[in-house]
Length: 345
Ligand code: HEC
Ligand code: HEC
Ligand code: HEC
Ligand code: HEC
Ligand code: HEC
Image (tube, rainbow, N blue to C red; front, top):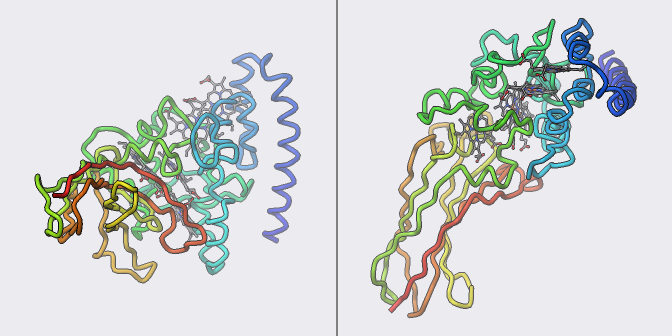
């Protein structure tokens, strides 16, 4: 019965998409603001409302949400991560591995009903949305309270995001981290929705991820002799993120120190790895190492030896892997680097 219903919704969505695009190009411009508001705040809005219907009047927001338009997101043209949250391959394959009884839980956030009506947003999650399942987190997930369209201050509060970015099992604790760790005074919306942008730039934007962590230059002794042991030090400061990094459980961050000779050949490299552990994956949460909001990690690489005299480059490179558990889905994001040239006597 459920599958039949889904097919019906899909057909409904397709029919709507066709009729909406016809209206979108020809008539939208001639609709007065009064008429728009009537349609907009009228009784027509329900979970069946396709996001493309909102897009008829809110074309910019729709294009940002639906195509990640105007961004450097990896999925530009395909969609914002909210829009593809129920269809992207990493999610659908993981969902497929889950017992059917888990599906409603996953869909509560990835294909959410209405976040606004969740009373205890810090602990609980929305019910899943029965209609338009392929739209992930859509306009209705965020703007519909079951009766009417809502915007403004109810959505500007970070606790609103907590409905899907925080829950009681500690798999997702972004809001609580923001509340407890972060002293920078910005909201989630101020960092992730500059000028109201609905792409929601985050991990998957190459430019955005470079704002996260400040990396110092590598620190080495004034004089280094061939064959002698020395330490390389550096610091990583989370001064750009309102929560811990890495954030998502399946990501891991690597600070890679390497030494290259003048020909560019790597003669030394070592990585320091950071990630959240969770009992859900059979790990001990107590072993978690992340960089909290505002925190500076002092890193020291001891016992480094360079055998022969010459000129070398010492570099620190910060990388984040999108999936530490499944290499088939893993991609690596570049977060920044620093370097120093040294002379070995
Ligand atoms: C027929 C045109 C039209 C449609 C369709 C439409 N809107 Fe609007 N919407 C408007 C107008 C006009 C305003 C008020 C002026 C403005 O802010 O742009 C508005 C305002 C808003 C606001 C700001 C309200 C506030 O209190 O801050 C939100 C949020 C919004 N719309 C969301 C949606 C969503 C979600 C949909 C789809 C369910 C939708 N709109 C469909 C025309 C429309
Ligand atoms: C993940 C939650 C989320 C989704 C999904 C979402 N919005 Fe919003 N929207 C917000 C928040 C939060 C604000 C208020 C933030 C601001 O104005 O900076 C907002 C503001 C708005 C506004 C009023 C202010 C403005 O900048 O235009 C409109 C209109 C709007 N959204 C339309 C839409 C439409 C249309 C969709 C679907 C294509 C959509 N939103 C999807 C969270 C969302
Ligand atoms: C109805 C649930 C829901 C709500 C409400 C919601 N989100 Fe999300 N958000 C998600 C899901 C699910 C994903 C991950 C989708 C995926 O990658 O499969 C996500 C992903 C993101 C991303 C990641 C983008 C990237 O590059 O990976 C950011 C940033 C984000 N949300 C910010 C916010 C902010 C800020 C708010 C509050 C204004 C908010 N979200 C409200 C469900 C929601
Ligand atoms: C001071 C700015 C700032 C604030 C405040 C902030 N974030 Fe972020 N957020 C970032 C940056 C920068 C990144 C990219 C870092 C990374 O993912 O490594 C990020 C990453 C994310 C991601 C992607 C994580 C991933 O691995 O896919 C999500 C989701 C997210 N933030 C949600 C939120 C929510 C929800 C809030 C509020 C409770 C919030 N952020 C507050 C700056 C901020
Ligand atoms: C509390 C809401 C919530 C629940 C429940 C939830 N997710 Fe997510 N999921 C998110 C958010 C938000 C993100 C984006 C990353 C972040 O916030 O750090 C995400 C990211 C993901 C990603 C990574 C996608 C990417 O683009 O890298 C996968 C895969 C995923 N979830 C699968 C699942 C599965 C399977 C379930 C059910 C067992 C599930 N999620 C339950 C909110 C949720």
